[in-house]
Amino acid sequence: MAKNIREIMAGVDVISWQGLSEGEVRAVFTDSRKCLPRSLFVAQRGVHYDGHNFIANAIASGAHFVIAEEECRESSANVGVITVADSQKALGIVARNFYDNPSSKILMIGVSGTNGKTTTTYIIESILQSAGLKVGVIGTIDYRYGGKSVSAPNTTPDSLTLNATLREMLDASVNAVVMEVSSHAVVLGRVATCHFDFGIFTNLSHDHLDFHHDMESYFNAKRYFFLNMVDAKRMPHLSINIDDSYGMLLVREKLPEEIVGYGMGEGAGVTAKSVIFSLGGIKADVVCRGKDNLCFPITCRLIGEHNLFNILAAVSATLSLGVSPEHIQEGLANLRNVPGRLERLECAEPMVFVDYAHTPDGLERTITHLLLVKKKRLITVFGCGGNRDRTKRGLMGAIATAKSDITIITSDNPREESPMAIIDDILGGVGAKSPRAESLADLTAGSYIVIPERKEAIAAAIAIAEVGDIVLIAGKGHEKYQEIKGVKHFFDDMVIAREAIKNPGGAR
Image: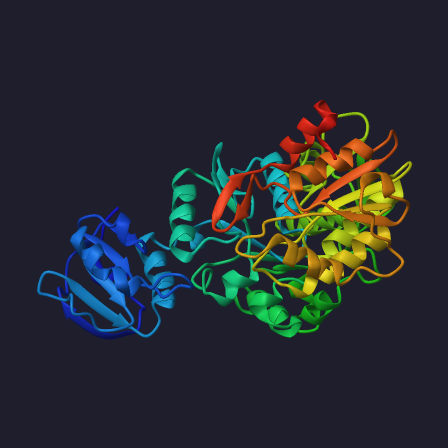
């Protein structure tokens, strides 16, 4: 792929342009080490690195054009240096132009909210595939289409990666893309030049306050996406969880014809009745109020009330997009599981589940459902990530110890923090009614123990579990690493749990 620099820069606010003013661009990069001859390098200021310090490297590698936020001494007659006020904003426009605006040529469904985004994208993918569409997914676990899968470094990729990925999907004849849209992506402009046909709001609860600082700012990021970045010409173009208080705030700002509300409360356009929850999945009748007054049965292997909401979100969206109830039923029945989302280990007893719950609301919902189906005790293993929102740690400690029969507090991804400092924050929320045990033998109903090493904690939970118990391993879900001091070490909760089942002698 190659384009003229003037075509690529269309729509970018340029402050100055030094040196080379015409020429062909064969690639766009934000990493100077990847630059090739006749490429464009966009210098961005990041948390750890400033791309402006690597402009000379980019030029040495063959970059013919540079976009920067300051005039550069590296400019010459053979290199074009384009100065802009905001490199990140410019990158979004450049990426869209270079890849021929791929999001405008494909059905784009954006899913945003605190919890449920990943599962909802999996459900929609299965439904659309049953309807005969070729589907691409961009989300927390991976970016995938047509049997190809790339691990996701971010829930929502940067604008350059996003447009390049969408271009690849379009070239591979993908009909529809289901994409998780994080609040970070909205604030940082990663999706600013992306076209969305449909938006789904799942819920909003305590998370990411290290980035947003307060719930109002967090909500405003979501609000901006739904009110300003989803195509208003399609009716309806938003599915909103009306059982969520923040969802109702969104509803009040839109016209009735723009929205399909889903949930279990009064006024939901898509709801469910005759619901049966079990460890085998969910059975229910989906009811669609309105001009069609549809009612049809569904079965799905996903478990838990929160997954009923994810199903309703997906059903409300796909019905609005013209998918038949028959294809919706087929898609739901075909979906086996979602990696790391209440994923059950393939063993009879004890029942072991791995879940990505890493927010207070997510942990509480998961524990609450498992309490409804447990036969004996619920043993919860969890920790909190380092260099992230500290305010949720104590809340999660309070939820886990108050609701679980036994809690094992451990490490998650400590990143640059001390694991014990994180655990101390968790313990700050534990109430006096939850006694601390110093050994596994001392554990009693409602008590907890601290085992900092996650592998040891998982092994301990499985070692003490009896027939009829449920072991919940929460926090990391699908992740296959543990990040410590900038290094990602292989760590997969499912793998560790399987080893503990096979070799039960590892607990202290």
